[in-house]
Amino acid sequence: MNKLEKDCTYPQNYWQLNELEQKEIYKFCPFNKNNLKFDLKELYKFIYKDPVIIYNGQDFQLTLSMSKSNDIESDSTIFGGDIFLSIVKDNIVKDRIYLANNHISFPDYDFLAVGYQHYFISPEGEVTTLYLIEDEEGISPMFWKHYKIDNQKMKFVLQDMLVNVTDGVQYQIIYPNQFNIISNKPVTKIDSQELKSCEDEYDKEEYHSCYIDVYNHYNSRLKQKINLLNKNNNTIKKSYLKLQQNMASSCLELPPPVSGNRGETDPYLSNVMFCLIQNYKQEITNIEKQLAH
Image 1 (cartoon, one colour):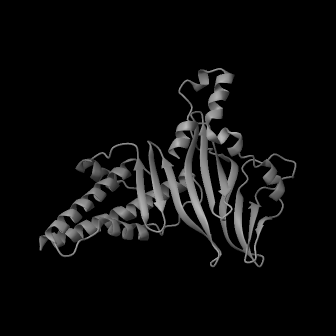
Image 2 (cartoon, one colour):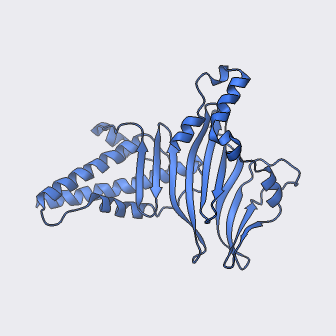
Image 3 (tube, helix red, strand yellow):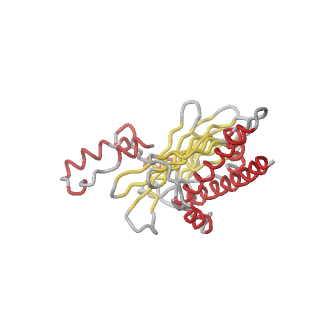
């Protein structure tokens, strides 16, 4: 996602360039190259009335369908049509995921932007989706998901996600027990007053940049306490990695976002981080009690 964002961000003087120069820069973005262009118009015409089978196996079928809110004629241009991929067995939909859309509007944004979601289904039946936002600065990949199909349970099983937020920060979730923060900036130390202020105002329905500082603070303290405990105990060593994965496993049981809309990803990230922070604080308290004996 980092490379895609780099290749698809326009230079600052983009809008001062002539049309030919703009086209050359526009073509440099992989999403605008012929082999990666997504034109859903024909697909919309193909599936707008009824679901269409794209895989017909012995145990189940995969179908593409549109949301029923799109009441259109087959020769109309469709914008904002949600496309879904379903697992069907004996004419019953067993599971369904949000797959694609060619135009997602943001009426509440202060700037002109449009979103869309692309997808890829591998020959092995693995599904990846990529949610993008295009504005005057270029095209930004915001949300990537990877699924596998469980043939026994007839379910799409989410394997991993990558959520892109502002300021070069990404959140990597690998199920069932990995939560990683990927940042191109050094970890900043938060002072006690800022820490208290951010914790007091923590809103699990929103995302604020200070949350990552609070998370890093308690994550770092937990590592320090574990190292200190292990130095004082030569027999039983506590593993930070195992402990962190156990905590992440419970916090990642929260339902993941359906799409890359910030109205979905922000509350999700805030809730997961809040859950982890509380677990870290509790474990720090437990270790401090052990160290006191």
